Image: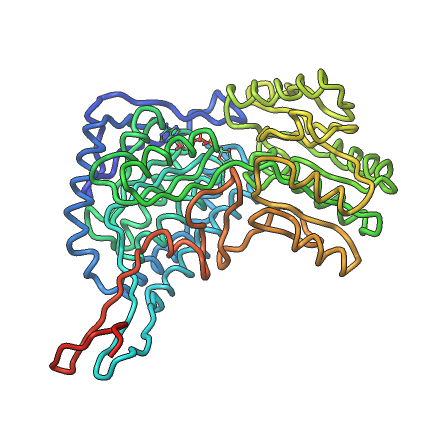
Length: 496
Ligand code: NAD
């Protein structure tokens, strides 16, 4: 049954002032309507901003441990509804059910982790150079934050932003991708049920061009946290920084696995299959390139192509499905176009290469897992983010060449190396210019208690998720307080 999805503004679920709606259909079977979503107008954004600004006055003074308790309750509610939410994600976005459940689990973990931060939002006390004076630094919230998220992690990425923003004392206007409005609204429903006061969290729906930019550049917006493509993120960041807003952008990737001649090849093949074709390649962390030592290149290609050609495509709710559809016809066309580009560039198509329309899959946006061999580093399929089930395999003579190839794109999100040699792994760890490096694991598998984000065109501003250098640094600013209780004028840094 199709869900009716509304705005959530100042504690009320309301229809948009535009009076318009848009549909969400299952990308695995477009006959299935998943939701009908209200299409927010700019006036709805204004209303949401007013509510968030008003609510900020009390929320910033609400004790942080109590804010954390609300998040903890949200974590419990998410856990209770995990199956239902995982299934909804599969229907709305297409990822297979175990991945949908994993996405919800990430939100649960984030809720519990950030709940704890409510009791840890610590600054420092530092000795003063003068007697009878103390000095401290403390974290204070930014104010009203605009959160803009993509469709590929419909609940996890919103949770990555919402939980730290809220526990830090900010109020929020959240605009999820219009391709996953239904799942996003469930997360908001849960946070409401967990006890958030009205106006603290507001939800609007629609396309980025229509309301996303308006929201981010709104005069009432203090901080903007965006995850999405590099093309959109960079332009948005330039505008928002020019307006004096704090900005963080997590963007695209062209992630790679290096496979050395001493690697456990079976393990590396498994990692490449999971990294390349999990979520139909629609992860910012997807393995888009594999750089293989020439001595194991042919064997790897044989094993990799064999394993990938055994993957079963279909509706992610059906047991045994390995790979779901891509999100929409535009994405499908883009991926098929890249396959054509790869052919024209002279790469060798080993498996896949076309849309898959067998049986019920004819009603969805399915693309066969596709592998190109004989790819050269400068080819477009080795340089540009494809965001679909397409993997480019390149050859390298040694570790240095492999690292040079991996670092030779404009992106820097994730890299990985398979080797049994501790010295090689140490060199790779030091030299790979990506925000995340995996040793003997695929490019997928970030944990929420560590910062997440990339270098170069993959990330801008503070990182996401937890730990030192993580999301709390985005959603708070530092205030320094000096207190002089000497009762006389004392001068610091003045020669006496
Ligand atoms: P996208 O850039 O098209 O959209 C992302 C979000 O921005 C959506 O909510 C969209 O409505 C909004 N948006 C679009 N144009 C806008 C504008 N002009 N102003 C303000 N908002 C606007 O990306 P997508 O297709 O939803 O997601 C796929 C991309 O996201 C890929 O490039 C992927 O690598 C990236 N991604 C990155 C990470 C990461 O953490 N680095 C995680 C997931 C996805």
